[in-house]
Image (cartoon, rainbow, N blue to C red):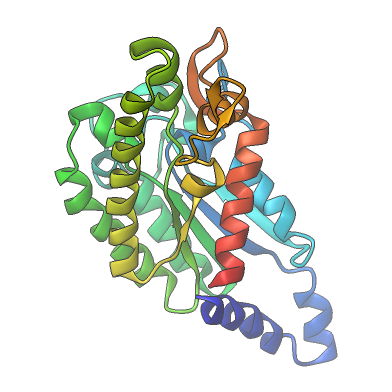
Amino acid sequence: MKLRFLVTICALAIVAATPAAAAAESQAPVYYLSLGDSLAAGTQPGREFTNEGYADQLAAALRTKMPTLQLVKLGCPGEATTSMITPDLPFEGRTGHNACRYPHGSQLAEAVNFLHAHQRFVALVTIDIGPNDLFRCSCTDTIRLNLPRILAALRDAAGPGVPILGMNFYDPRLAQSWFVTHPGDLGALAVEIANAVGFNNFIEGIYAAAGDPVADVEAAFFTTDTTLVGTTPRDVVIVCAWTWICGPEQNIHANATGYGVIAAAFLEALKKN
């Protein structure tokens, strides 16, 4: 995947081979296309769309080397793999927000159209999708069916030289297990961790089959680290510090710091691949 990223950057440089072309090309935009659900939208309590999300922070980091990079955010709160392909009934942020009204019908169709229109100037694509499928039906069959279709459509539209990166997930339910449903029970926490890791392994397998790297958010949030910090496991401390789950909002979304950690995980995945 590192080769894909370098090929993209080199292709842009070749177009700028002449001095005149170089002057024009230095001002030409390149694009980062962000896809997915509420995490891609940067959702915060009471604000479904913000500029504090991981995509915004990753784009800011990448602009140090690609100053004309433009972020295109298509993520929609509540998006699942099914609705990403074929819009279904209104769900969360899908109602009442222009950001979730896609002229080409669905988020995937909008992304494919954008990639075809800007293929030579797309630097990368990121996607996070899947947890809302679990919220809807507590099953993985729809993800197993839909995510490969989504990734194949994106790859076909983007071409072989554009990095497409997915992500695995932190688990805010660690805090609920430790403080609410099974207070102080390390055994119950271990079960929740195993479920989170199992789901992430499942997601990673689909991305691997498509040849796309995954930002390791699970590791970045210390999901499997139960070392006690005082009387609380480290993974619980971290998820409380980097999301809103332990505050009065009891909101599962990352805060600005947590989104920054996710952005760093994507950046690390780009460097490694």
